[in-house]
Image (cartoon, rainbow, N blue to C red; front, side, top):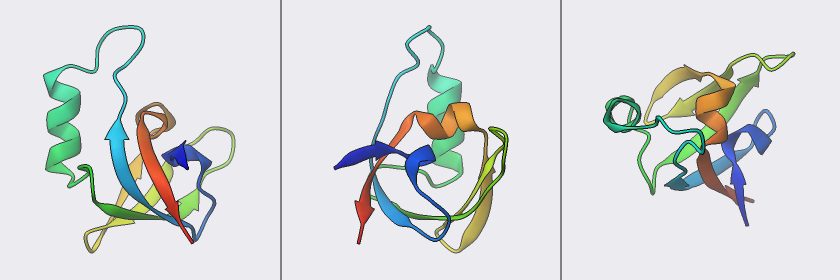
Length: 83
């Protein structure tokens, strides 16, 4: 089942399957390059470390590093939940 990264709870893991384009435009080369630079590419495993309250950023563990993503960016990353 594919869900946005924001749907994962703290401690849950998933594998990135795809990244959605921004429905309001944008999400061009700069967005894709930023994700690639952070190592967020399809097939990569991610784990949610902390989810800030009040629509704050999400802290994830990916490829041995911890990263913080804004909710807007994290919503566009689709993952398959690993059980």
